[in-house]
Length: 139
Ligand SMILES: O=c1[nH]c(=O)n([C@H]2C[C@H](O)[C@@H](COP(=O)(O)O)O2)cc1CO
Image (cartoon, rainbow, N blue to C red):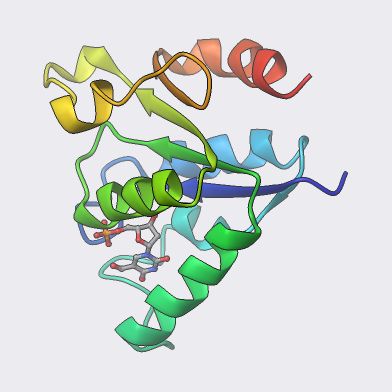
């Protein structure tokens, strides 16, 4: 399948959900090419070490431009993920925000408030909902 997918999840914002990101990426790979597999790598803690911050930024923006859709897991707040969402809006990408209300926090109004029902979708979910959600989005 030729669809390009950009998955966004917290790195320097905190790695509590890294294993969940890996499971999400595994599922997304059934629907296209996922550029950002390193986000699910448990060895990536404070960021990728083989690249400078500028190299990371420029590579990720290039990947985002090439992607059809941005899927951002936003439960663990991350400045980088928030930035990527804003850039994806500016590029007119389709955006799917995933948030787990069970965490007890509230999603930023700047993210939930951007929902428009078509190109910017916010999904409150539990992990077991993901296969059905992805099937609905992609098929
Ligand atoms: O090493 C990295 N590699 C990388 O691809 N990113 C990108 C992808 C993630 O969706 C997002 C995470 O941002 P942050 O590190 O601020 O939580 O930024 C971020 C870092 C470190 O900031």
